[in-house]
Image 1 (cartoon, rainbow, N blue to C red):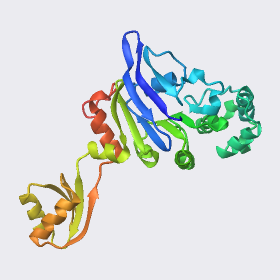
Image 2 (image 1 turned 45 degrees about the vertical axis):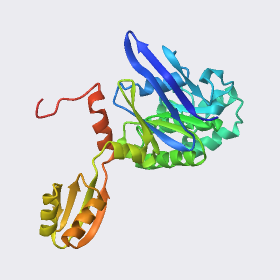
Image 3 (image 1 turned 180 degrees about the vertical axis):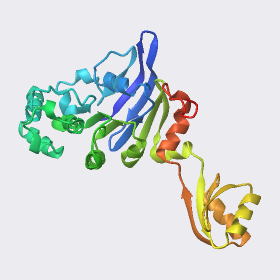
Length: 306
């Protein structure tokens, strides 16, 4: 069993609920994006999953057992919560060698993982000389124990464009290999490139637990983009049918609230030639903001009001 099971999890701090009766499962073979506004409870949930705090009630099972019940947890779970956790006076190689020794992991895995995360050329430099992006790569070296389950909190933070592509491909590869991957992120556009499934929190509560396509469909309005050689006739037919449209170019328009099939059928009935027709979809960022608008704990004042 290699799932991560959050079961009726609650965590209170001084009367405030950071996590509120949260239940969801992270399945193997896919990347699950863990989303929510600041203060939604994502980091608290991940810390509780790794035994770094005691829940007020409920529990998290890692591979069917609490994290603390695993004899050699690094072989079961790889985690990155804080890229600053490595001791600055140690070299990257020594940092990983200590972890390997503590979990009876062959030392050859150290050099393999350093190469995998791109730190082999600087493995003997002290961690305090590392940039944030380099520390993130060292944190991802939590894959040292070849774990079946991986939890990463903002792994792309501080990475350059090449690093972002690298982490994206790494996450996809782990999922293809059947690993269970949970990734907390604020980068919506980046999450959309690697996540298969989404778990969304707001004020400690579960707002959504769905596949990426289902989430986008549930939290966005259908639309279509169409191009015709007779825009005047098509626009008139669309307006008569009560559809809102936006002209985007010579002969091009987007239609809100109608599917591509709806627009195609209407054009056929009106005898209007269609040169191009396709569905439009909300971005993950748009769908996420539509869902979480009422659950953001910290929001800025618009500039014109300020």
